[in-house]
Length: 123
Image (cartoon, helix red, strand yellow):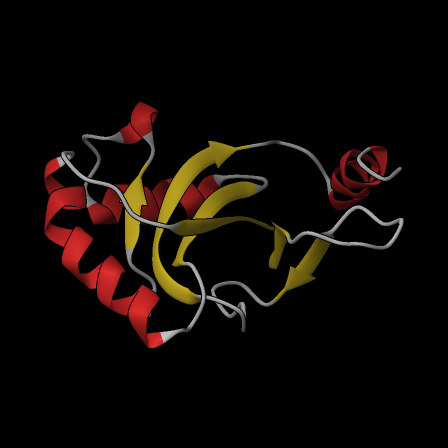
C-alpha cells in the first residue's frame, strides 16, 4: 500500500491533512521511492540501512520516480538514442521494490503541459 510522507513544506502535516491537500491539488506531485533492484543482496542492504535512514544518519541505494496525473515517470539508462524516461503505473516499477512516497506539492499544470515538459527532455 501507499506509505505517504510529507515533503519539506508540509513536514508537520498529519496523514489526514496530506490526503486533504492531495485531494484539493490540481496536479499533486508525489515522489515514489524504491529500493534499487530486486536482487536479494540489495534488499538486505536496504533493510539494514532502514533504521539509519529513519534517524537521518544513514543511506542506501534508491530509485526515485515522479507521479502526476496517475502516471509514474522514471529514468533508466539507455544505449539507444532515446531519453531513458519511461512511464509505469504508480508504485509498480517492476525493476525495483517500492519503499515509500513523499508528497511534494501541486505542480498546477494540466496533462498537456506535463507532456511538453517531458518532451523537452528528449534528445
